[in-house]
Image (cartoon, rainbow, N blue to C red; front, side, top):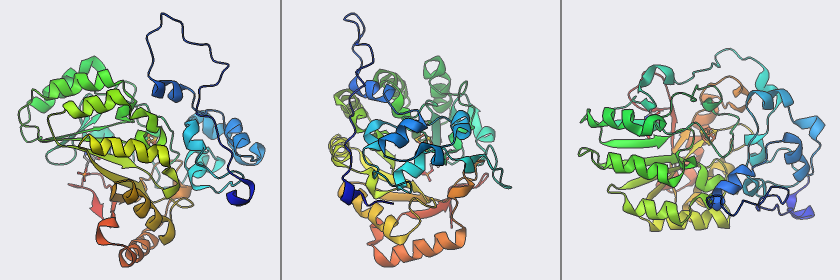
Length: 352
Ligand SMILES: *Cc1c(COP(=O)(O)O)cnc(C)c1O
Ligand code: SF4
């Protein structure tokens, strides 16, 4: 590895590439974040070339064929040039190791296909309804269960949200709706507003939560339209972000998060404990401290869901507990996330 400081980090353009056709004068104006979304890197070879790395030695075409590479250029710009072990790169680069079958690692690791109660609604825990708003994400994280979940026909947005909203209306024990996915903020703001307008007619809802990685991987998503929508919401809103490493934060992310907070939202972070990414006390402490600097408190540190293709990211429970104990000894209590695992059938996330 070559330290980035010695060779300088290569700035990567976040502008759409000039070979793309200019939008026609009559086309509806597309928000900038959607252009940046489309312009994501999807070729492992291109990604590695941008980082000055040797493609043939690293990337796996077979793994990429199974779950394609996708990473916004702004996120690539936060990776260290010339470092194949970069913690951001490791989260997105398809590797041959993913294709090795490992006992205990399955297709539906957390029992989602059984907990689904109507199209796109997952109810596992009391009081909360999780809406699979969409299957799309701006970034494809290699460790994610999403690589197998059959989202195509099962999003809550299908049919104008109607089924999901009626299910929530008819169950007065539900007081919190969680927008999840995929990434719910990959939907157009107008589509989100249709949902929340319908939910606003449900009297027993008290809270809205959004689970999203977009403000971190594509901070341009936090635009004026999204903020205007946030300000209209009739419930306290909690945004649970997903960053696994301190290097995922930069000035653009800080600015997006500051605007979200100014809209009144509470910001939390959940991370996944990942071998080779954040499995050290230093990395976890830096993540908590850097998140806090951006106005985000740590919420959960998840043990990996045991999905096929993710075994090489796993940290064993003993090591996970040791890391967590060391973190507790080192940081202010509010900077220590809860170490949990999702176990099918449990009434909530299980503390380790
Ligand atoms: C994780 C999860 C939630 C939220 O759980 P919290 O502990 O409240 O964060 C809700 N529903 C489902 C289906 C989940 O997987
Ligand atoms: S659901 Fe979250 S963790 Fe999974 S690929 Fe999308 S952004 Fe990554």
